[in-house]
Length: 181
Image 1 (cartoon, one colour):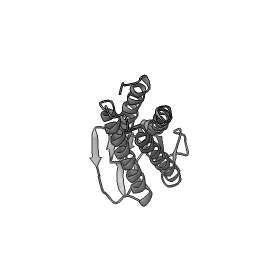
Image 2: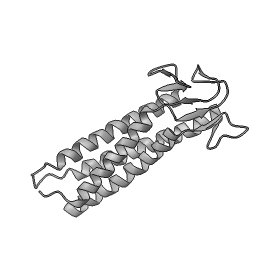
Image 3: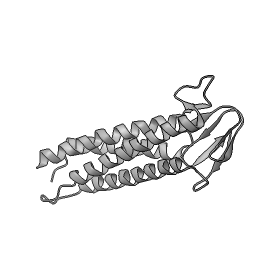
Image 4: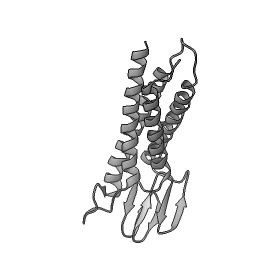
């Protein structure tokens, strides 16, 4: 089986999507705080500080808390992003192996499409839950103003890009599946 242009484009988009997902998942910049704030039952710090899914940073000091006393909605966000990460990596493995596939009867595009659709849904639900609850409970807003405690950081926006990238890549793989059928 010959590697098509769509497969190469799909793989490049899949690598970029996974890269955005890993960056959003691992970096502590989901929320940018100002002032002395307490979030998730722990002191975030004075001045400018950041909180991510797995830790909080103030200046150059970061506190990594993998399984702390986090609220249920925060744990749900962590779980959904973890599931999306696993599905994205699984899709990348299958897509990479499919480039070497010489079997004419196998079609790896359908499972890749399915993994990416579910991953994009997991990311989208995680973002909605995090966005609504962070706004309600922490007074986080899209822009920092007088009434807000902070704003959504670049990791949050990177996760939005990863959700869009996963959805776009899934459409490409679904179309490849139809073309090869």
